[in-house]
Image (spheres, rainbow, N blue to C red):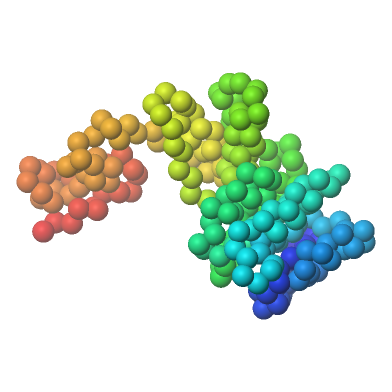
Length: 240
């Protein structure tokens, strides 16, 4: 890793831990504890990646300060990749940050391998935007050019390459499966299989067996092993 990384977090211990990890991986790392220091820093440096906390004033939990910093960073001529750093309970805030242009999020306390992978992925996307933006092709089936559709495509492009869990909601016929397929194609698992399943067509009493399979004798009428629709799921129903 050869990059300039800025850590913007008012928790000195958190910033120091991330700094040590990324410096060991060859990055040039700076830390700031106050977003008011950002303007001066940006006059002197152009970070490739920013690890951004979202609350700096004691007692604030709404994330507005971090979202404002994100807006400022996204307005730069060549904006850095921004990775949101949030507590686990603030995952909805992290998702909002990604809708506004962050490329990934890390929950605190983080796993070192996960943080390093997030920074590596952010650098790869920044270095090769044409290769790291599968959302254009992935979203080709999503028709329309309204502001809402442009926002949806941007969100797919941002969240697809991450490990975030996504729930797609909507009425019948609005295109939930199309969005799910686009997310899959924009992900690092695009070469793998995409399985679409109509849950409404499965009886409640047999859902587990349909999805994960069963072993012979696991329940009445289970006369032989049966593979489920999810690969590797056989055996979720133990033999009594």
